[in-house]
Length: 554
Image 1: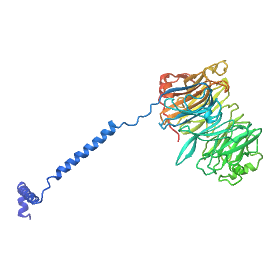
Image 2 (image 1 turned 180 degrees about the vertical axis):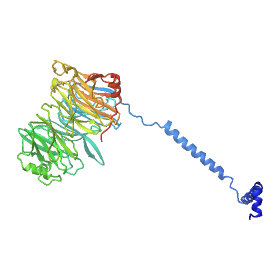
Image 3 (image 1 turned 180 degrees about the horizontal axis):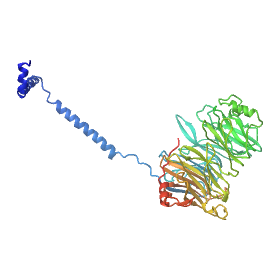
Image 4 (image 1 turned 90 degrees about the horizontal axis):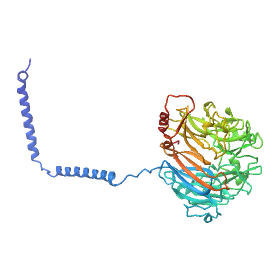
């Protein structure tokens, strides 16, 4: 049975709740009376309030100072177009880029010889021991074309290699190494223009240089990569090794034992062994860098030999590695599935050789390739090689899949004497923008290709997403000495640099270095349709090219 208290609670619930409420109030009153008996701290709450508002004020003040009083570093303003002139000068086929003044924009390096010396340098040819005129190395700002530094570096330029690391105390700098005529070997600091070291070269008076400066591992353990130069005197090819940090010769001259031609290459096998490769008649010849180093120094070398390659060299005479279909014109390393492969261009075919076994991966018949191929991306993340086959009105531009040799795209584009080499820049869609020189109007006509200066060189832009269109960006009537497509700022500032000057070294004239931002040229460009029709208007095509974004390769 239900108790009397429970029955009363059920009958009078509100009455029961009133009792509980009174009990709670009484208990709370008792607790407050007990608290009143404790000592009070009247300033504690006030101190907390003051501290809170003081902290808030300090935070707001810091934000105000950082945002309005201390200015954020300005992003350097980069001009879309600039041009630098030199009068009574000649120039050389050399362009390089590096961020010299640390403004996050690539700057431009080039060579020129001025009969009146330089107007932008405190140094004259005589200050560096040369007679006038002499060859200057110059660096200009990629942002606005202002001269950063200039320096006499040789009596006459012959060979230049930039971005060579140089140990400078506790830091590593970068240098341009210049081999000059008749016998100079100079390193110039890229960032300051100061001469780091200068020596007479060791080459014979009748020697001709066959190669660029090859970078070797640091064989003398001085903290900088060492340098290898190949020369030819009569029919003998010789190798010279120099310290990359001091320019002093390591050992003596080393003969490679065979005759050769230009177009040499330094190749690293999958075993990490370095070999010099060079054309010799209709064959590919080679020599171990380890063997050359041991020969010129008379002692052991820290470099490696590859047993497979040593077996191939020992099985033949005169260092022959592979017999080519025709005379070798160009030889270059290309990325392979494992390590580097070799792309060989001969007078009869283009051949991709496995970089270790030297077995052909594919052969493409192309008998008139007269320019060095370039690489780019036609399909996303898939390398293609650009082949310019033929000359004059018969020139064809071919894009081949690098892994298979299959033709991805081809187009007739007549060439002119003096046209520069093609170029490419990677785009954000993992393809490439390609730049070709020629004259599209000659296609399908009976016109003849004229001499340099008689007609204009046209620069065309191509992107694989619009395969039926070329965009004509510019027309140049001057003699083009060198051309480069450059990403001046990561992912945003694609431009091309053009170096023009006299056609002959003994006839000084106007030398010009100019930068043109690609995006600024697109609105006034001419759309050249390679096929009839097309769904897009000319303006829609320009908008597509203008919207291209570029990316920096690692």
